[in-house]
Image (cartoon, rainbow, N blue to C red; front, side):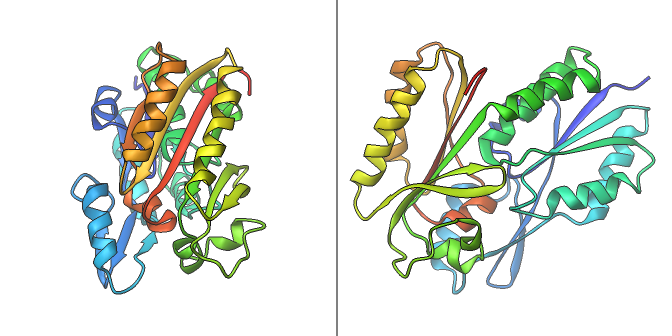
Length: 282
């Protein structure tokens, strides 16, 4: 008899060591830079991608995995009778979860597909926990119940230094209230229920710093915080400061500071960042 196996997509930002430790199967998305297509995997690091994007003639384009990639993986993982949980980024950001659903109707394996309505380390929180529970021998129903609770109680904030990539990539329509001719504006948004919701916007560095002080107050007054993650695109100096200050508030937590994936960096642009957290109550 098989066991429960976990699949996700490459927008789930996590340490490779955790992916390997918990036997998480990652289906890569793709990014096209000046006509050349690259898989969003370890062969294309976030740092190298930022250099390539800066030199590119046009904004890179991203694409979801082919349905066949999911079918082949599901067939392989389910060959021994294993059940599969396929946990993915929000459908509002990518057609990846829809491709997974279509594949789940083709494969002979038993697959449950989940749209987390989030991405990056917020997605990874749920994926890693699901894989931990799977290794403990929990049933798919037990795992689903816990990660649905996690997703309901996870917040994802995104800061961008320019709207240019969001505009060119067609994501600006999802960022309600950001229709502006000023592309260099700095904005902090919450990604909630598949929408980018602006919280603060301004032109100087103080925009991010003032918001961060508010976030620290939000967090330090919540005694149920269990996970915090910080991701960045390009330079990480500012995010190192954020991590250090959050680590002082939560010395018991391991806060990961990771470069985001090329898929996400394409749309956020250089010097963007994300801070996300999970708490039993938010």
